[in-house]
Figure 1 (tube, helix red, strand yellow):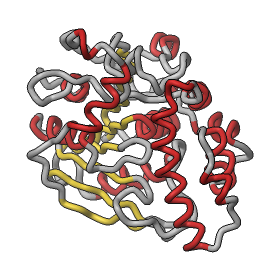
Figure 2 (cartoon, rainbow, N blue to C red):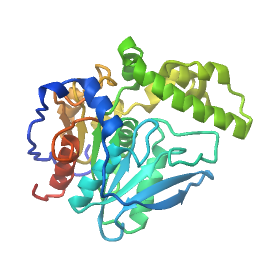
Figure 3 (cartoon, one colour):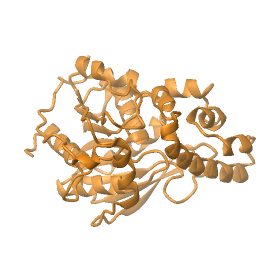
Length: 331
């Protein structure tokens, strides 16, 4: 049962047709990471203290009181400073949204206070951010997430289901591994090795620092030599965060099972050539059974790519149009 009548969004967007040289999922994934710079975004930082003694750093564009606020979550080992977050913040601000780009635990440039870290299923943190934004007087809230942050966002929306606060009006996920097991297996393919090496280098460095800080009983040598999410999640993410194994973590943290329960207009934008996504990360069946879920699957775009001329990426334009349309605002 939907918490309110299902409101499919009448979304009119131009088709994504990149030039021939950008019809590569790998180029779409890599080039923005290396070369994109986003100007015109000035953040104001706020620290949100959590009930467990930890904190989250929130980076604001605009003020919450009486405004529409887009709460934006970054991806694995990212931050609010990543170009894809800044690009989305700039476009949504242009459309009249206040933006709260929140940094997952330990991702704001300062280590978090606890041994635990962020993970794909840590929806309690997003819940704390949304409650805080509403407490500040936001008139309406939309939640947006990229990659890992997108899975977390969609999982939270599914958990909220019929009980979601009526002031939360829309959601969007871009390049989302809704089935973590499928994506983790895809990332073990040899052609994805360059991405895994980068992730593992960053993650193992953070874990080593945590082990020194908390005198934790962790197999640092095994973590340092981990080359797959299966290894890393089995050695750190699962045991530290209360999961029985990497497979248990993936099953319990994936947003896919909860997609039919989402009760507000929500967009999922996953490119078919995304090198990070497994075959079950294109949930057409969930979109068929839940009229609140809009699924866009362009042939090209890579992972958090969707480059186009003019400074505004196609994904930013589409998410902006969707959030506005969910509020009845003309494009």
